[in-house]
Image 1 (cartoon, one colour):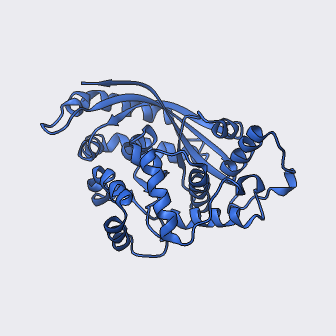
Image 2 (cartoon, helix red, strand yellow):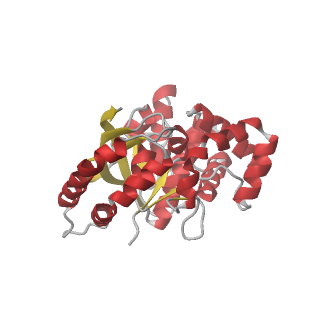
Length: 306
């Protein structure tokens, strides 16, 4: 059974720990491609890059991921569906004003798919955080994960909305693991090959935790992985001539589940905290398919580079 995880395009663009850890530890990473929904991703990317300078810059910033796409480690869809469809659905539902009224004023209307993608490309290059885009992206990825039963990678809570969301977590397990925090795609692929057997066991254990399998021993799988990582660390640390540096580090993984509409509810509570207004609780509705979503929360504990 494949252990696939959803990663935000924000984390992929900025090469943050949730993306780098997932690209090493998981079988496959699914992300939202910044292209119009329902069209050829390659064709639209080429057309947008030719006509919009910021979009061309975004595509250039993703160039480091090419080998990961080619190897099948990165994907823009799962089970024939794309995360972008859920993101746009969430955006449209909030704009319709039927649910989550506190969020409607934070979002912007887009005349078409290309307009939305241009705005997203601009925000991705800034690293966010424009709530007009980060809210539907986060909630849409959760919706996608809830529908397909895939965990969504998250960063350690920092923002007000994230801290509100943290209160909704149901902890399942936690473990600390060594990973590559900075390095080329080829370095990640090399590590995946060198640690193939141990990663298979670790992925099986992580899947088992989310499946509530009582026979899974996550700590033993983590111990075996750590020992194997330590054996090949010097090899992974050795940079190529054109490689600036390789950064290895330690991350904590917290496996949790939470309400499938947690991103919307936590954003609403954050907005209410800022505006000091309250929206009647019956104004909210669970608009995300499925009642719970799984999450893999990644926090950097330490890093070392050469």
